[in-house]
Image 1 (cartoon, rainbow, N blue to C red):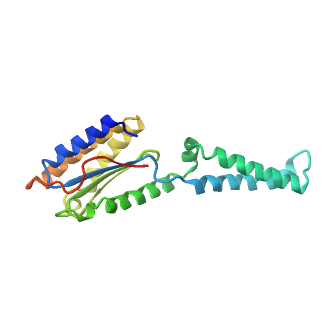
Image 2 (image 1 turned 90 degrees about the vertical axis):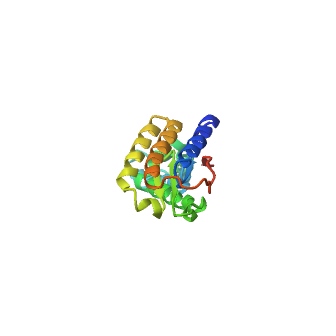
Image 3 (image 1 turned 180 degrees about the vertical axis):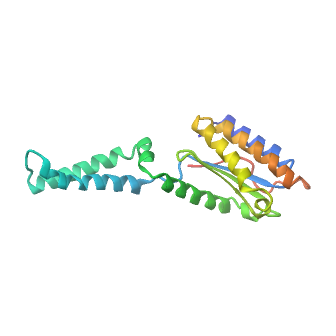
Length: 203
């Protein structure tokens, strides 16, 4: 997550961008879009259940009660092991991670009131760090004038920088590049600031 210096840089960059456009920019950063406890638990349960058919291949036999106890021990051990975040993220299918992150991004778009800006010129830059997921959501007033391809190029560059561990620099560069597009389609006509400029961080 970003330190105080980069949080200040993000806020300053948003302020600078919004001084040249009527659009409202909000940035949201979350460490992860979900805790995925249910998936790690399902993996632990699945592997523990596999122990039963494997018993017949062992050179010794266990009593029913012993086998049942062994399964429970394996389930608990794997359940604890799979809570280790680097391992948890590897167990989760990419589609599931992106679906959860995309769902959270859309909730944040509404929660941050980007849908209620004057002229429908709200823009959300959303990042889920653990999922390496970045999405730019533009309200109707911007989406009608800026192509998805333009946003996609910015997002791809953002993700590339995040994978290098440069989340702070990635945010600043992304806001600046978005600002260039916003200035073209929605140049500043009034001095206003409808929404906060600071980086919203979700715990």
